[in-house]
Length: 139
Image 1 (spheres, one colour):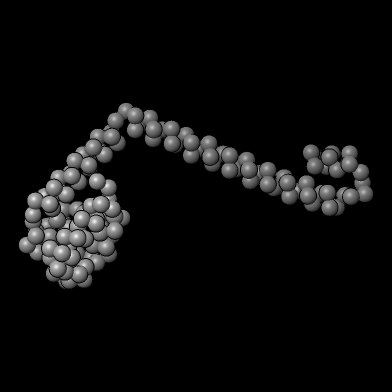
Image 2 (cartoon, rainbow, N blue to C red):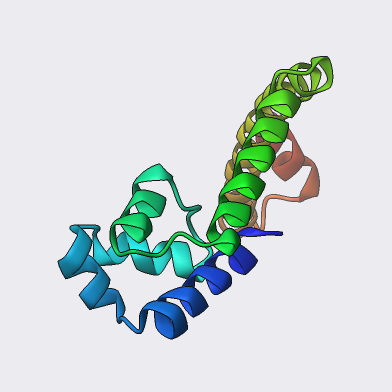
């Protein structure tokens, strides 16, 4: 189950089971409306504060416990993956790639400046001949 599915299920529970708007949940629980919106749209995963708020509203069903357990399993797997040898290697590879990209960007910037200089020389030295132009560009 992905973030959007979690959020959609929680939105259905809020609307159908609790019969409340996001604003009503905010007023009853002190949760920020932005947080509720982000959870229900899949931009943020629900946390313990959110689940406790649902319990406070009197909603603690098997479905909520299942969502909570799924989230805990998912977070455990993500932590395990992040601590594995492969993810450490991957993080190092990403760092190396960032360095390479940064160096390439500097090279491209220098090339761009050189192209501008060559264009400028071409405009200014139309009558001096091709050999003089190349010598100036390369010096």
